[in-house]
Image (tube, rainbow, N blue to C red; front, side, top):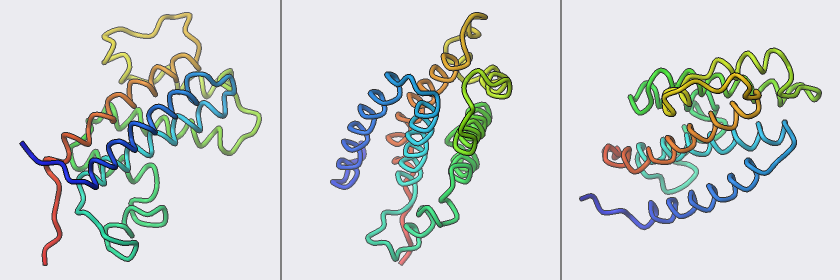
Amino acid sequence: MKKIERKEAIRYFESLDNLNSFHEQFNYQDNDRAIVIVGIAFIEDLLLYCLESFFPEYENNKSTVYRMLNHSGVLGTYSSKVNMLYCLGFIDKMIKTDLILLGEIRNLFAHKTTITFEDENIIKKCKSFKWHEELMMMPAPKEASAMEIFKVEVNTIVSHLNGLPSFIRGEKRKLKK
């Protein structure tokens, strides 16, 4: 059994605190925009946590790993994190596709102040999700709203991504001297 380092333990407990905060903000909001932004922001945090669990530890903000993962680095965007986790084999194509779709929805909400879950484009995108149907072994009920489908999708993705770092740590890389 691999020993968990102090830094990993601290990050683990931070992620539990973040999960609680996400739950409170995401599941009890009535504002469409807030639901989308909070949901995808938390997913992006989990994507980063997965990558940090794989890449070598970094000591400071001058390290190569830090610069790659930083918001202005090569893995600083939501889509680059998704694509890297897919290329490393940590997520499958269905999850990758749904994560990209979630990012598209986030971008629509971020750049259009009047958009809601009643928008036809948002409804279409929400009905395109596959991961929650795979996990629950059934399609969403016909009467389910786009917001309900979105929330179930985000919660199932969060549940999946939240468990990945402990698996990924087993393949953690080290920098060569």
